[in-house]
Length: 260
Ligand SMILES: [Zn+2]
Image 1 (cartoon, helix red, strand yellow):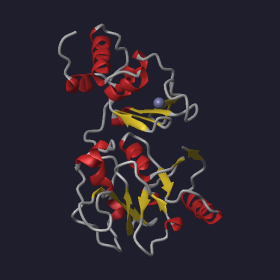
Image 2 (cartoon, protein in one colour):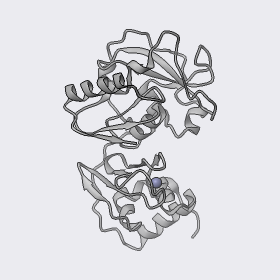
Image 3 (cartoon, rainbow, N blue to C red):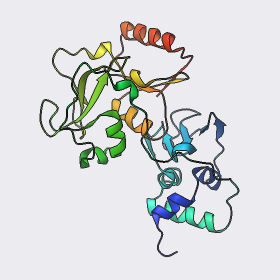
């Protein structure tokens, strides 16, 4: 096969069709298709999540996500180019029996209306489209939506600064997430008590809560169609934190937690 235009493939192949082409048996619920990931073989029976409305997938096992091409590349464990070819071939031989669903336009993952009230002023110098952020798998839109960005200066200098809000949406602090592999993974300003906060709690709605391990995972999962993802900001979890979580779940009428 000759030249494959990634953009055309992305445009023309609905992600539901890729599920079929890949021979995956995923189950649909509330507009999402879920099942075990045959590649990662971790993350449980519902590790793989395909969200047609966002034309995105996320794998809790591999903690990766992306568009339809990235989806095929993940499941076939192949390059993006081979994945695009696979999709293009499937599309032209008429295996498409899945009707195209209407998709939301734009890729901004979340509304941010709840963030209007702020007790701390947002940092204006953060760079949401910085190379270091993109290399982590983040899209600029996602960073903008979360108010995150690479910090070229300040106490988070050289890290991805991610805002932390209270439940109501007040900005309380920024954490600095490493963009390399160095430790600590997260740093906080002096006086901030990470054990008293649940990251992303301000954006959570009803339904199931997804508890992750790293704010970066929360951003990437949200970018790829996972709603209601939160995380603690500490390595270990104390009884007090679980009490906060329980109260929070109670007030939002969240019935179940999915742990990743
Ligand atoms: Zn996987």
